[in-house]
Length: 243
Image 1: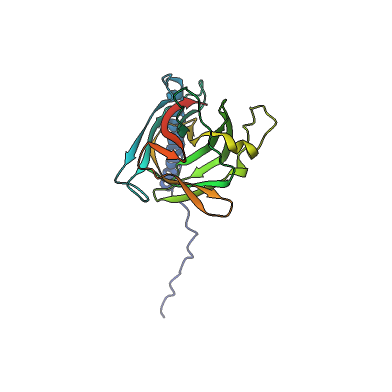
Image 2: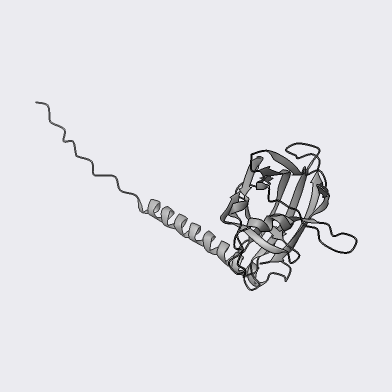
């Protein structure tokens, strides 16, 4: 008579102690990396130099959306919590006349400004777009709370003038741009960094003004730092500052 073989039921598989140790070690490693990144940022801010960084502006003949070139805005921002937010700006302003007077541009017939932009890295953002008006260069701001993200591919951006406001810290009855668009003296972009060292490039090309009927007029084609709008001469420049 053949004997019956007893088949034992298998028990559920449980992680071995070595597997648990590997998971725990991985968690500690990730926590350590995050802590090291935070400590590095804190140390960089505590030991940061007084300068917020540096920037420069070039005409790039190789990288362009159209025409003969584009504006390449290079910057290196060094954050410092004790000092404030480090930032770089790329602005264009009207050139003073022989007597030192700053001429005004009348933009009342236009409803928006549009341009092409790209960056050297994904995720980089423009944080502000500014218009300055009048002899006192009063700032009107199109604030971008989350930033306007750029990519390594050209992107067309349009900003309506009715979105511009006086900054919250500024005094004045005219909170919106309105009729002050008749006295524009400068405009441009700002990038900021409060926590991390930021080194990157942004390209700007084919800046245009959009009329209320949808037609456009070229403001800057990006192939020179100096350009004209009607009878007014303008010049692009870049710098770094603390906000």
